[in-house]
Length: 489
Image (tube, rainbow, N blue to C red; front, top):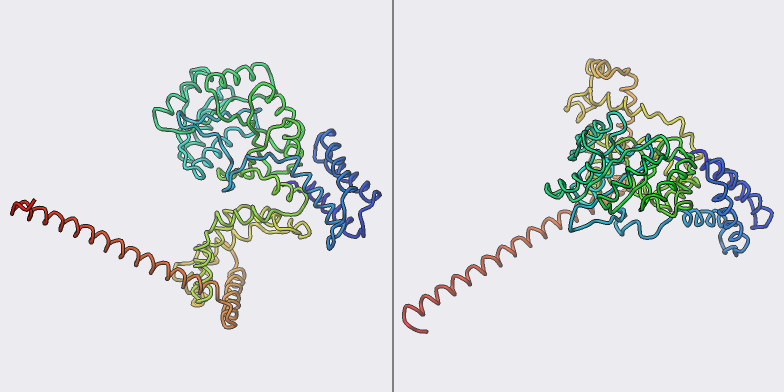
């Protein structure tokens, strides 16, 4: 993501790092380099010019803070201005989720518009899955693209893949399909309706009239413009054209995991005034992220994105699983089966090159030499073992090794290297254990046991209270009966 422009900025920061102070001369040179980088990224000339002028004014008017190098302060100015250009307040909630306009009186209607080839249909599925996972919603997908061949079939395949209902009618007009879908969704208990409208290869009157009719009849709560993030200024121009005809509430930029120049992501809001709400970062159905201007600014400037990396790690493995793994390592119970599970968790986070790019300073690493297939080979070797062999790899003899190598399609040398590395890791962890560096896992286990005991105690107390209340009610009933029996009332 943004490889070209981030490398240009990284080179610029290296040059500025040697500056002793901010001067008009080095600011002018840096601003010129920034403008060139932005134009190469397909940012419009007007936006690039306005951006660099603001950076220049702030840089020349800034006082160098004590303990901060001038070059670092200039980077901070550029970073802040980049965030200011892309950010829209109030689009993300306290939990980091996208703020959505959900309704309680009828299903929330989300209209997806855009040109053909931008990835609307796939994005509809991604958005439905996001709303289900993050908001516990029950979306219905609506196939309203009756222009593109097999568009309805594609949405049905997408819906089936994520377990979502799809409303389709190949004989009716798109506005009729959408209007009926909203009524049907309310009957069947769906609280969100996502309309996959038709696109064209270019903006035309027929496309605009159709999508305007759909909006008029369904009264959408959110109208998202879906555009290809790799097309730069063309995406921004089409976004502006749609915004003039529809009440857009935001944009979704797709294909940012490809060779994106960054022009669209930096200028959609500046040109249309509408915020970017989501970005597509992979072809997988979970490859939709909420747009955070500060994180994207860090990626563009080559500063990494540690927050997103941590979130990806947390989605792949939770804290309790991580601490259980740590405990297994420290108690020498970590097996090749556990190792295989960790590899699978890492693979869920995305390609290794993309993950490494999120680490600050990773641009200086030879990322093109990262061998993604190496993990495939390791998986193949471990999967060719029996469960017992994964638990006790030290018992592998020559004949077993031959069988595993043949079954995985890898050499015995590769198998031996894997086993050696695995054993070295275990020895290293045991060395840390002998030095008393096992506090966190031990503390976690102690805390878990205490929590478990506290829960059991609380359960016993509640049970005692329940029994006591029952006894009081029974005694009261007996007393009332006794008073009635002997006419004591």
